Image 1 (cartoon, rainbow, N blue to C red):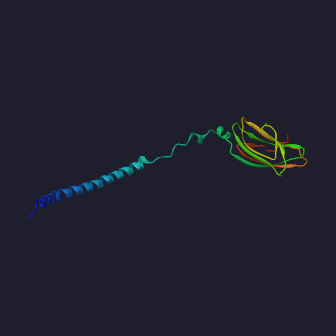
Image 2 (spheres, helix red, strand yellow; image 1 turned 60 degrees about the vertical axis):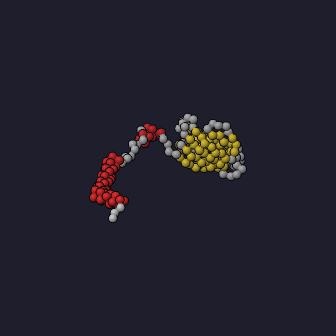
Image 3 (cartoon, rainbow, N blue to C red; image 1 turned 135 degrees about the horizontal axis):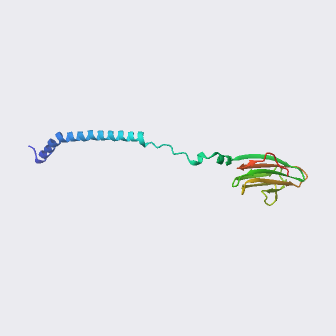
Length: 172
């Protein structure tokens, strides 16, 4: 009482259950084994050769002592100066060629103006000034203020950059 479709189905189930389940079980076991071997090989490669080491130190990090002596740290100073009546005052900084300096100065009271000259530039008259300066050669660069009023004028000078300050303000 079996139909031809049933016989074909039972024939397939007779062929596959014995051998098919065994081959399916073997392929599953092989897959687990191959996966475990691959994972072990990958882990071994990671431990032995796969880690990335630190890069070598750059050459700039090991400058010779003579070159390190030329490098100056960035400085930041705030200086208070007073220019006597009918006289002049000055302040100097030492700079290496190519060094940069950002500065700003202002008088203590509004309405007080001074004639000012910096780094041999043209003298101007004002109550404040600010700028950035790049030294064209190594040496001393000076601000010079002239007070033409009848009372002392205080100056607040702010500096930031690569320079060496003068140890004392210079009068001349």
